[in-house]
Each structure stands twice: as structure tokens, then as C-alpha cells.
Image 1 (cartoon, one colour):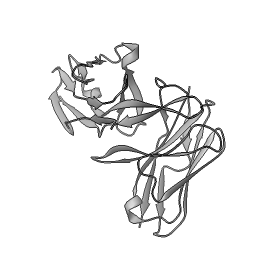
Image 2: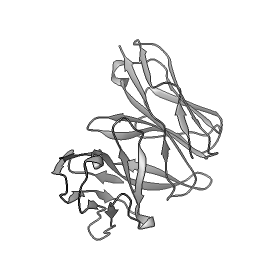
Image 3: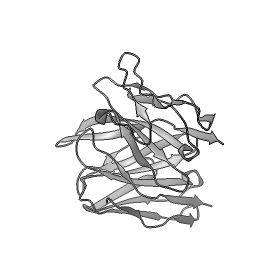
Length: 114
Length: 113
């Protein structure tokens, strides 16, 4: 079954420290993976997707198919990075055209201390 | 700039009441989704719709129904609200394809007493 696992509910680091939020997935096909973020009192929004291979707000994520992982990394955490982070996998279904439903992990709350 | 709006930010209802949550998007997206968000459980898909009048069950459809009469509007209905439906409800919309981004509404915090 398709599944996304985020093993840490809470991750606490000091400002300037490196951050790694872990994400592992289970998917039978070729995965499309995303990281979404929710800052306090804001709506959930896309942070980055693996297909874009981009760095957003200093965050990067590399898809490792051998380890079925898509960990989110940032070399130097900032206080404004404190938020809830969700890893998500797009599950492709066909309803008169290709559709992708997102399967979310349970989320990791990142707290960056001053 | 994509906008997904939800009819209420906060809602308090009594057990047994029929509850309607409305969601509107302005980007002409084919797909719309309803999730509930609970601490420790993440986001769980309730229902989604890939076209007008089309709907598919998600992971937790029990106790819910949906309606999509117009492309821009997707409604979630709690036929008879129960206390275990107290939650944050998020609506999202997105285009076709596996790599599309989902755009989320601000959420409705529903409390059933």
C-alpha cells in the first residue's frame, strides 16, 4: 500500500544548526514527492517538489529511490523556519485522465530555538 | 494568485445537526479535495472530485458526503454531526496530472458539542 512515514513528531534545534526532516515512502510506481509547510496561523502551502530540483528558503530535498526517502534539509536553521512540515506522495489514478491524489505523512513540527 | 476560500473559519454545531462546509476556488481547477487535519494524524482525505458532479471516496468518507454542482465550488456535508467529527477541515484544489500542486484554503475549525 502507498504510505508516507515521517518518524519524528517533533524536531527541536537551535538557530544556525543543520536541520533534517525525515520522510520515507512506500510506492509501487515512480513516485512524485512534495514537501508542504504550515506556518502558525497560515494555510498549508507547497514548499518544494522533487521534480523541480529547486531550493526554497534554503531547503532542499533529494529523492533516494534506493532508500525510498525524501528527506528535507537545511544547513542553517532560522527561527522563521518553525512550522509544521508534511511530506506527501502523489498517487496516480485514472478517472478519464491522469489524476494525482496526495498521500500525506503525519507531519513533523519543527521548532527552532534562538 | 490562486485563491481557495472556505465559508467559515470557526463553526460550532450540536450533535445531530446537518452541517455544510463550502469551498470555492477561482483557478478553474478540475480537482478539489476535502481533508481533515488532526494532531498526530496529519491530513486525511475525506472525498475528492475530479470534475463537476463527480466524486470519489478518500480514506475516511464515513459520516460525510459531498456535492459539486459547479466547477468552482465543492461542498462537504456532515449529515448528522457527531463529537468525533470535531476537527480542522481543509479544502484544496489543483490541476490534472501527478505533479500538480494543491492549493489549500484557510481551514474551518468545526466543534461539535
